[in-house]
Image (cartoon, rainbow, N blue to C red; front, side):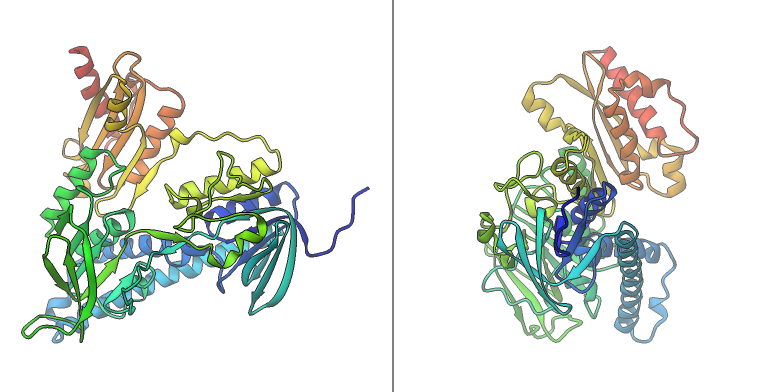
Length: 477
């Protein structure tokens, strides 16, 4: 006989409606579990839909579409007004896509019988949360919890963000004007993506990064190719430089500015940089401040992140955490999988996690994607390998797309000929990578790609060219 429970008692309470929260909730609901999703903001989707993944990718696609058409700006009487009008159109298209995605998530929750409540959640004890918001107050009891609150941009003390001259990635989609120049502080995924996008729109970009290269987790040859292309496009890269002072100033006499104030950065080396706007992209903080984790027997680190095991359990076994709040890689795709795996584990559902098969997609211009081992990792582990290279300039589809600078690299085990990793930069990279992902999953060898027939002309032919290049090298080892 089934035990009756109060209406506010659930099998699973998900805190946060981003990618991790969505997938966990839907996975649990598919197993006939009673699920509620708590969302602090007025709309579902979390940072991924409202301020992060979807907005940035929507802006990117709109910029690429705009930059691919003949510009009418030069014929306008007011040059800056025309630039701002185009930027406004780009942001408007972004907001339309966000609205569509929010409606889609809401529909999925409804069709799966998932309850949704908007308000700020805080733990009262390890099985209870209090929720306070515009919809009123509720006390939620649950057998299991998933913390999927995501992250917010880090805002260092002493830096006065004004949503105009000094901004984070959250404010960029709402910027009222298109800067003539911008300083981007931080060469991680977010900083690199926005810097390259805005450069494609004609903004003069200076990117400041404390490390000696961008995206230090990406294969070195790929990042070197990216840095070369960014410099060729006019970007100034200040690598190995750290910002020690950031402030908003009045434009110096004679300075060209599209706004009443400018951003100024002083670097550790003593250099001073100025631009219309500064985008700060160093670090993100887990949005855990208001959760009262201590009441549930938990604590976050100094960056607001929650430690979990390989099943995404926290120190309290019935409370799980997934998504950006648990740290690297903090990508929407990996967050979705983490949420699904967490739900499977908490309800004893069979599932398999294969971390080596997680793809990474970086939507810079040009875009980058990777799966499997990097050359650096293979060298460090003492694994013998060879690299097969295919350049887009060798591929008919590359010429048809107007992209002759892209490339695909396949890493091959010297003895077994197994595919160990695939790395690509250029048009369609984030789509192209999934062929390599499948090959690694099924332990394919380089000979498979040599013998495979690909549609012509396609970018997928890169796999055959890279395989033949790699196999020729292996024959001479």
